[in-house]
Image (cartoon, rainbow, N blue to C red; front, side, top):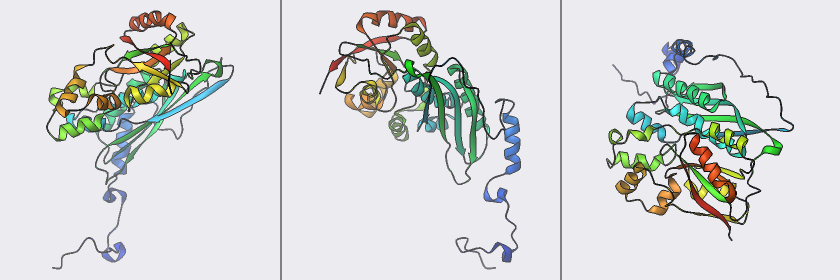
Amino acid sequence: MTQRNWDDPLNFKEEGIVLDYKTAGVDIDAGNKFVEDLKTKVPGLGGFGGMIKVPVGYEEPILVSGADGVGTKLNIATVANDYTTIGQDLVAMCVNDVITCGANPLYFLDYISTQKLDNNIADIMVGIVKGCEIAGCNLLGGETAEHPRQLHYDMAGFCTGIVDKKDIVDGKSIKPSDRVIGLASSGLHSNGYSLVNYLLTRHQIFYSDYPELLTPTTIYVQVVKRLLREFDDIYGMAHITGGGIPENLPRCLPKGLKVDVDYNAWTVPEIFKQIQLKGNVEESEMRRVFNLGIGYCVVVPDNIKYYVMDFIRQEGIDCWEIGEVYEGI
């Protein structure tokens, strides 16, 4: 019997082979059943397009959109075999960006690709639903795609918010002597995980010793919305993601201004110290890779800084004065 070389061209008709989608790697019937089961956990699935009523009361409404992912934090979820929080991370990365200019997140869309539909996708979706509930925005739709030759999960999120033009927070009012208030992060959030994964693959750290690696990203939307209602002088805001404070805080500053950040103003969480120790990572590199315990920043006048910090703490989030604005080259 002659053995076939499967790299040779194949004539399906001559060979009497009837190809279907399941043979190619996608089981339509199983996919339909998965969606029906998922509807019990995620209401409202199934339409071609999501619809939402535009809120009233805006004099000159401006829509603000953002898109993001969770990067290689997905690898940690795979190592832990726990996908219950990664969906919340996805929402957080998007809504925290949109709220920095004062926009109230209206709706969220997701995209998930996977080799095969399974219960992990359901866990991811439940996390997305929870994240949207925390942020107070609508889960309007999304796409879950089966890619049979894909080895790992991948995901992306998209968020749109709304703000009145007169209420946009754009940093233009920031001036020398203004102060930067740093809001505590819940841990690494969703950045710096390529370095963490490098340590994991070289057995320098182990997930079993650091389960906080999967702690979901803090969603700052509600505290920021209340902060903006309480104070008129919130001049600028920054979501501290990849690049840390050095690369994200300057994004809300007018040209010619800088911030003298006091990295001793807060206690860096232990997980960052362990990563630095195990990887022998220089301090400058830690600062530009990780948030180091500060997940969000607001810039305010010096005369209201204590009121702002008291307000944030009453909302259940710790915070510190971490820097002062000055004129720079």
